[in-house]
Length: 153
Image (tube, rainbow, N blue to C red; front, top):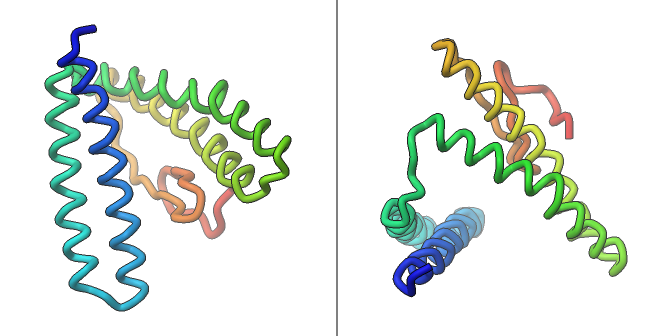
C-alpha cells in the first residue's frame, strides 16, 4: 500500500472517530444546557464526517449499495464472531463489568446488523426492501417494523 493510501486510511479512521466523539460531546452539552456549544459540536461533527467520506471515496471503498451491504455483512460478522468475543474475554479476565456490558451489547447488536444487511441485500435484489427501522439508544440494537416496547437485548 502506498504512503498516500495508508495516510488516507489513517485519516479516515481519525476523522470518523472525531465525528463520533463530537456527536457525543453535543449530546452531553445538550444535557448540561449548553445549546450553542452543542450546535458547534454538531457542525464540527458534520465537517469531520464529510472529511471521512471524502477519504473513503478516495480509497475506492465506497461501492454500490449491494457492494456496501456485502462489506457491512463482512464487517459486522467479524465484530460479533471474532473481535467482541476477544474483547469480552479480556474484560472478564480483568473483571471490568462496564467494558464487558458495552462489548456484550455491541456484539449482540452487530449480529442483528449482519442479519439485517443480509436480508436487505436479498430483498434489494428482488426489489422489495421497504421496512421502517428503529434503533435502541442504549445498546444499538436495530429493529424492523414497529419499535419494540422494550429492547430485546
